[in-house]
Image 1 (cartoon, rainbow, N blue to C red):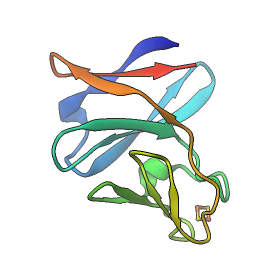
Image 2: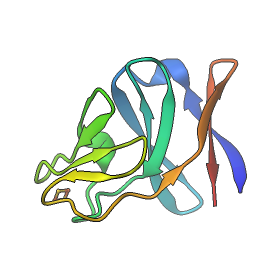
Image 3: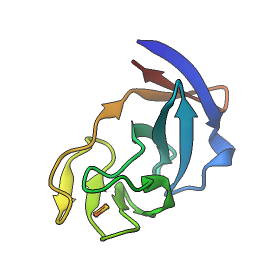
Amino acid sequence: MTWVSACKLEDIEQEGAIRFDHGGRTYAVYRGPDDSVYCTAGLCTHEAVHLADGLVMDFEVECPKHSGVFDYRTGEAIRLPACENLKTYPAEVIDGEVRVALG
Ligand code: FES
């Protein structure tokens, strides 16, 4: 597992997400309502749509295509048509910088 710098905390809105590409793969990095940060695979498990383009509310992200919903803390698919969970990755903030552990 390798920790990489994804962005600054201020680059992500509270209850927001950004797309982060690294090593030929795409991820979504989230900032929760309490400023905690999380990272998941970037593409919806239903079809390959970028979740960072979706709507973040509380600790959930709604897919922009068919409104499937995931809990981005655990990756759990909680509303159809999303039924396969998202892969999650550790994330942390150090000195205002968001780092994620990939691989
Ligand atoms: S592509 Fe995300 S719910 Fe269909």
